[in-house]
Length: 429
Ligand SMILES: *Cc1c(COP(=O)(O)O)cnc(C)c1O
Image 1 (spheres, protein in one colour):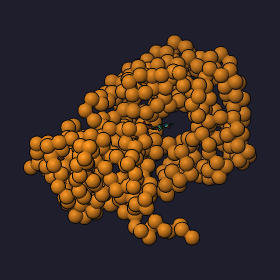
Image 2 (cartoon, helix red, strand yellow):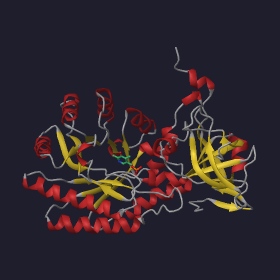
Image 3 (cartoon, protein in one colour):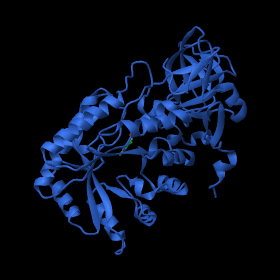
Image 4 (cartoon, helix red, strand yellow):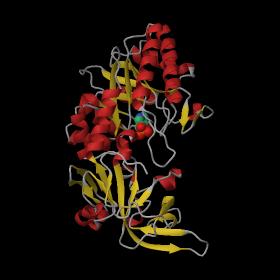
């Protein structure tokens, strides 16, 4: 298996941040989300340092939805990255840590009037406008005396990247943004650009997630520049181009993430050449990674409750978590690697299915994994769970959400406490 960040094996035991899983279990119990703090900050730095070009202004914006809480916002604040939020709740979390409002981008296809008013009151930097009705809604809520509100428009460039291909057939039916193939979109952009209450900065697109193909990003960039030229001919200058996130990460053997240094060097060089040729400079280029910053920095630690071999031959490992803390397998048929953290190098005895406590057959955490025969009480780690696990956790079956722990330099600290039964009924009347 591939180890990331500070992960290591000592005497057959798994360690992260210099801390053993036994120690974490003793201190915090299971199930437990464990994040490698050094890996998080290194990943942030990697993006900051590699997404650069000597003649283009660039900006890296972290997509909060991948993993967010107050401790994460504090790390982000120090890293210099900007922040993408998609709800009043994400904005509230950022505001509680006094994240610089100028560096906040508000996304989403259905921002409520309350959320818009809240974001305006907080003075966030930029709204990513999704469609015209929303633009009007923001305009209605603007107060006359303020500086023009910065906006970008989310557009759909007709490229939908999937793991190993891009499929253009569904290109015109995404719920997000407006199609660049629709003539009305350019007219709407002209209207926004000439509205004095706004500072129309440019365009945003996001072509998908968990992308391993360099070609998808290059194609999106090229298509966007072509569209910028079209707009320029209509008298609208685009000053900012946000290419979204989607950089793929390693979950299981065979997943081959792009070398980001190489990708960005190529992408920015290509963009610079195109923009210069079309006389469109200066343009600031932005990206919005989420998963690529947090996924491999996190694991979920569980305790094995039991094993059971069915009459049909399926060999189950039951752990003390469930689809409530790990939904991606049920939701996307996502694949994962798991290990018994106290017997990392032991010979494997069989192929197992890791499942949890939820009252549902679809409650699968890891569909297939080779393991030594697990014993009740042993610890099992599922890897690459730092993105879209804690943030997607629910209370299904009235299960309490696991806590989040950061490990670093041989120590650990709780950053989100474990939910209690009392928390579960807090809002019940
Ligand atoms: C989800 C999302 C991202 C982050 O995607 P990752 O695959 O986690 O990098 C960035 N921008 C937008 C608009 C998104 O919806």
